Length: 228
Ligand code: 5RP
Image 1 (cartoon, rainbow, N blue to C red):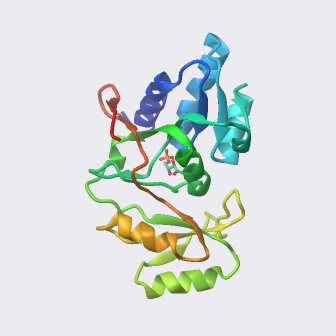
Image 2 (image 1 turned 60 degrees about the vertical axis):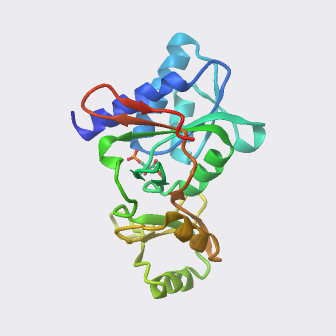
Image 3 (image 1 turned 90 degrees about the horizontal axis):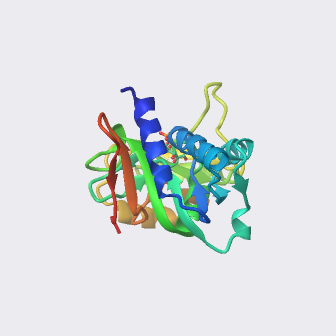
């Protein structure tokens, strides 16, 4: 199976966690794409009754096109479950997210969810976080100063650019600085440091947040529940 098939299998399997009447947070990314397609199918073909909030404009558009009821996150009083992708998950089920530059909204939705499910293919499972560059979302004002500070701290920052070499803008019109760390030995300490930097709106360390992980592998997707 190629990586896309593994993502698809994990995405489809995760929809089993969505029950009638739930308010659901929809993540962002290529794995989530398959989950949303399957959710749309169940809504259309099986009459599954859910309402959803989004973590990106992309996912919102996909869900609306599939006839899924979408609401602004400010207009729901709770979120039962959020299903999202991840870029890395370590031995302690800590994660890096933001490969799709949606980590700010993803974290807001995750922190307001009763249950968080991550869907990944097996390549995302690592012992230690950090091979995947750690995304930060920074406000454009003074972003070079924010960059300089991160560089001075030895965090190997790089502004994220697209295929045309243009700076990537998030849905909130901010910029992304990725930190090329290779290994993050102390994720909580790093998260605390980054939380304290004025100019960084949010970073991609998602710590102590996930409850369930669904991993697409060569067999049926592996489901790890009750993580916390
Ligand atoms: C977007 C994310 C994604 O969930 C993460 O990058 C995984 O993406 P994919 O499923 O495409 O591999 O955090 O900001």
